[in-house]
Image (cartoon, rainbow, N blue to C red):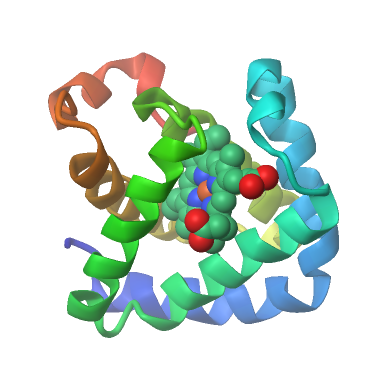
Length: 152
Ligand code: HEM
């Protein structure tokens, strides 16, 4: 997985600032996600508060494992297969990534500069590639070079 040491540090340190406002960040995340794609709403069966907590604890696990990526890969692979059962499709990783970047931008304000944005975007992209490769036999990373699938 290709994330630089500096990017890892940026992501880990900034996440510490998101944690205290996790509930607010999760609300922003879901609101934006359903704005991007209202059809995703029906996939989420549990209440949004506990869903938001799950999201934040998963991110916490991922962020804290950035220094031990070999251990993180099988966790992400298992998680991805479960997501197929939730009805998640390969292309859904794009609006989720964008909603995550939006929530971080709102939550971190000015601090979310272009360097930090690139660090989070690369981190999510790497995680999403591992998950999609594990779960979708038709996944081709080249498809996601299409501007439609860029994270903004
Ligand atoms: C880096 C990417 C992602 C991470 C770390 C993540 C994390 C999680 C975690 C920890 C859970 C709780 C249950 C479990 O462990 O399986 C979960 C559930 C779920 N996730 Fe994700 N997820 C990611 C991407 C996505 C994407 C792209 C979608 C697409 C919409 C999605 C939709 C869902 C749904 C529908 C559930 C089940 C909700 C329910 O039971 O009500 N996730 N996710």
